[in-house]
Image (cartoon, rainbow, N blue to C red; front, side):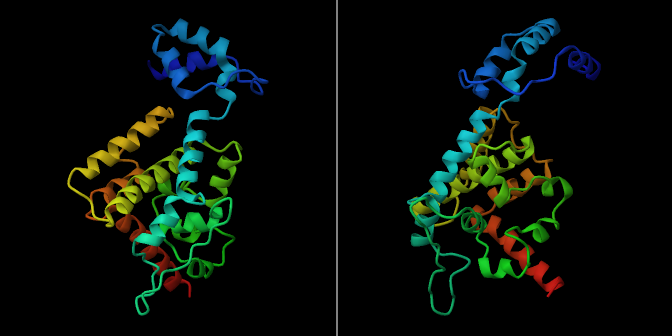
Length: 258
């Protein structure tokens, strides 16, 4: 449809209310299936008018996917701990060969510690940024579109507690966690961060499927945030390359503001 038609539809559909009180949970896939059966503009307007409150709910599929990936990654027996036990880390002491410590309780790893572990940033070094559990000074070096809603500790806490966050914030967390889970599983299974020639395409296909299942657009190389993952995925060691980016940015930031 044209932009003018979209504006016309918008003026003819009531705004969403406060959401449904109780009732069945509506998943993104169900909404997509219903929309696929519509053929005309008038059918779409009628559908939206009758079902507008469905769209005032949180994105159930995306939130559940993120919670599942977070539990797999940061849970008591999650991938972060398994990775730290079995694979070398950027944070290992080169002189002594000792591994950095990643603590976990009954509920798993604390969100801030898990967040830094996914990026493999040293907590004490990040503390020199003198921010309140954010890496904002690092992120400010990225393209503006990549900076916008970049995954952060506050965002994952809100999502895990079912609080509303922006569409872009949810999508970027989906991308990050899906990327990490894909490559760390492979690394734990093989004992190496190295990638086979076909792994890059498999990773991108998997990430796209997760995004589409949750009602989000596929990865797009022209998106500055998505481009980071395309770049890392094409390297010999995607997860290592991805983490190297953030460590280099941290080092540069601290050198500029000692």
